[in-house]
Picture (cartoon, one colour):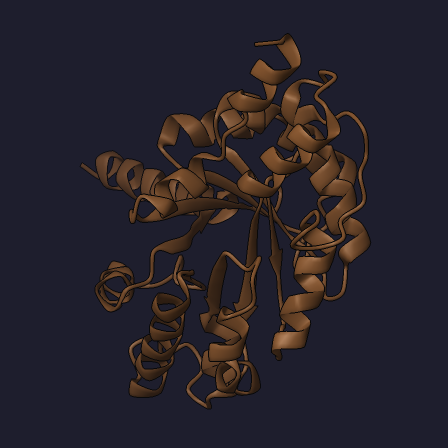
Length: 271
């Protein structure tokens, strides 16, 4: 086996591996971190993925690319939520090291097909070839091997965040090239008229519908927007069948730990 061939076979996506094994995948959302040590810390904590939120943060693309390239070599999956319609961003960051794209605000199966077109190589999509990739440590991997390995290891995660998208979820889940159908519980609960009520019957019915659509089409159901809530919300979502979660963001974890430390020290100081 040539060096190039051995490099191509080494490419892996730990999040995809866990999900394909039927297990629960957990991502740490990144909203503020700017240095590659976050990849090491997340791996040590046991997260499967880093989830860069470029829809709701100001983390620059070049920072995401640097951390993604390091994360791939560290053994943690870098995925990126792009701004609405940000397929130029998706291509640059896939070329820069990402192994997954999260597409917000999809409504129709045609929207999902457009996402596949931009994020997957042929025959699934029409992603443009970049040459050498950080995923292979910039080794000279033959184009067909690189494209096949990247297609096999790149997750396309589409978000259901509205009633309109929920009504089309069966068709969305049926689109070849979509890997995960991810419920944005904050926006969806708002659109359902039950803001933040993640155990409301309307939200539970929505989860059940997404899970059923995913099971029918061999896709993974996911859910976000629970990290600030009761752990029982995760328990319920997992019981209903969700298997991919944006489990926390680095800022909320720091704030939570900071608040607990201050609370403990105040109590000790008062004797």
